[in-house]
Structures are given as C-alpha cells and as structure tokens.
Length: 391
Image (tube, rainbow, N blue to C red; front, side):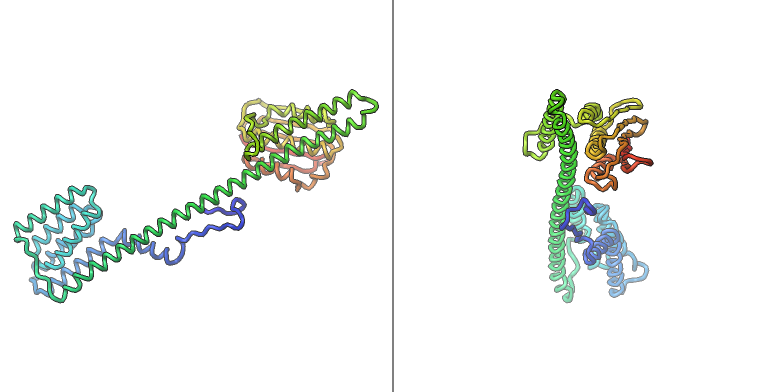
C-alpha cells in the first residue's frame, strides 16, 4: 500500500525496495528457475549422460538408454516419489552412464525429502530401492575417477554455502517486508488520525459558529429592547442561555472523541432535529421557513449528519451576513437522493466567493458521502446553498 495525495502525511515517504533493479533482476531469475529449472536440470544431466556414454564407446543401439534415468528429473518437484522410482528403474535398465545415473539418483532422492508430501512414504521408497540395489547389484557403486575426487568433495560444500546464502537472503527479505508493513501501518494510522482531526475541526466550526452567531444576535436584540420591552429582552436572554447550554453539550460530545472529557452517548444531529434548528434561528430574528417534500424515510446516518450540518452552516451565514433577510429551507426526499437547500433573499458578502471555511467544510461533508454541493449568489439576488446527497 502506498499513500499519496492529501492522505499522505507530509515529510513521510514510503519506498518499495523490491522495485530496485537488482531485486527485480533476481526476482525474474527466481521465477524463471521455479518454472523451467527442472527442465534445464534434466537437459544438463541428459547431455552429461550422453557425453559419458560417448566417451565410454557404447554402441549406438543402446546409446540413448541413459535418458531413462535423466529425463524424469523434469518432474522432480511435482512427482518426487514417481521420479525416484523412474530414475532408479532407468539406471537399472540402462547402465550406460553410471556416474551420471548416480548423480540423477542422488538428485531424485533429495527431491523426495524436499518436495514429498509424506516423509514416511519417501523414507520407505528409499529403503526399498536401496535393498533392491543391494540384492541386484550387490550394493557396489562404480569407482570414482581420480580426477573427479576434488569435485565430489568441493561441490557439496559449494552447494551448501549457496543454500545457506539463499536462506539468509529469504530471512532478510522477510524482515524487510515486515518492516515495510509496519511503516505502511504507521502511515495509515497517521492518515486516519489526520482525517479524524479534520472531521472534528469541521464539527467544532459548525457548532461554535452557529451557536455564537445565535447568541450574538439574541444578545444584541436584548440590548436594544431592554429599556422599552423588558419581557422581550428576558426572552432573548433565555434563548442565549439555551443556545449556550446546547453548544456546551455538543462540544462535550465532540471532545469526548479526543478523550479530553467523558464521552456522551447522545445521538448525532439528524434531519429530525432540523425543525428545532430552524425554530432557534427564527427566535434569533431570522425570518426562516421550512418546507419538507417527498416521502420521509430513514436515510444513512452519514447522509443525515451531512444534511443537518449543511443547513446549520447556511443558516448561520444567513443570520450573520444577510441582514435578517427572509430565508427558506427545503428538504426534498427523492427516490435515489436527498436534496437540501437554503435560499436566502439577502446577500451574504462573507461567503459570496465560496472560499470561506464554512463553505469548504460543507463541500467536504457532502463529498464524504458521495454528494455534490452548489453555493453562490442567486440569479437576481440573494445567496443559495444546495446539496444533493445520494441515498
């Protein structure tokens, strides 16, 4: 997994070492050997056996009998037990290239131990073949030429060193993969934390901006009427108190996610809370109407929260910047989507260009559920916010 784009934390990069040229080349060689190595080995042993029979001056009629002990090696990984039996039978029939046939038998015996499914079956077959060789040939093996002695001693040591090096390389590669996975998990965790911090920041912005805007408008209204209409001023102050308490509850719930306070288990705001939201804004002095159309039905929690926050932010902007112009909130339940809109007759200068933090937060929320948002001035006047959220 490679993180890129906005989800990748800055300053952190993940490089895949497996894509270096040397590793790519060794990987291609390994894949080639796993697929065609047995055929290559069978070919080499066949050529060796034929060369041995040629140097021994065997007759042409029996020249190719040695292939009975070499060709079966092509299937030594897939059918090790059958290959060992075939090699032993071929060597017993041929007797044309004893040295090459002994090497083929040794390779077949190794393959039984390395690739056989049942160790006891391989051990039993080796025992039977050894008894057969003793009974038929007396257990004697052809004399090794003097010139071949050093090779017989040194080659197994070289092969053992190669095997140890490959095992170390596999262990090192496994360690690198584990380290790479740990780095990927750390990057994924950091990206998830960054996304959660962004979500919490959007929630805090929505709650604080809306609540403070309502409280400022109500407090201003109370200040203007406190001398002439004390009852209305008291009502406005009670609305300020209620809004402040509701804001504190929402803040405690949001901060509970961070572990700073005891989390409250209350539900997230939903479409059912929109009438209360509209009523609180109306009490703050904004003439706002709510219209709900279509067949009301439950929708996904993410869609409901996004719709609620869009309406809340749009009403907050209208309350702060429209000069208390008439505003209409619409919720339209459609077969495959939910459309919400906030249409304000007054201008909203702070958000006219659509670059404010509130507008950006609305776009992020709508995009997070696969929807789209339009926010901008109306055709003639006012400022409109519309969102289409897929169901």
